[in-house]
Length: 67
Image (cartoon, rainbow, N blue to C red; front, side):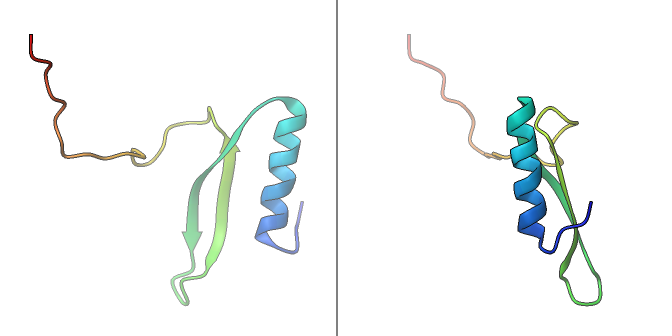
C-alpha cells in the first residue's frame, strides 16, 4: 500500500490495529544520507521484537530502604 504522507500511513495502521485488537509502536526509522530526511519508518505491533535502546536510561542506583 502506498500513502501520500507518512502520517496517513501511520494513521491507517493504528486504525487497523485498533479494529483487530492490538497496539502499535514505532520501531525504527531510516534516513537518507544525502539530506537526512526520513525515507523509511517501521510501525509494528507492540509485541514485535525488542526496542533497540531502553526507553528509560538512568545512571542512578535504587536506594535501599532503611530497616
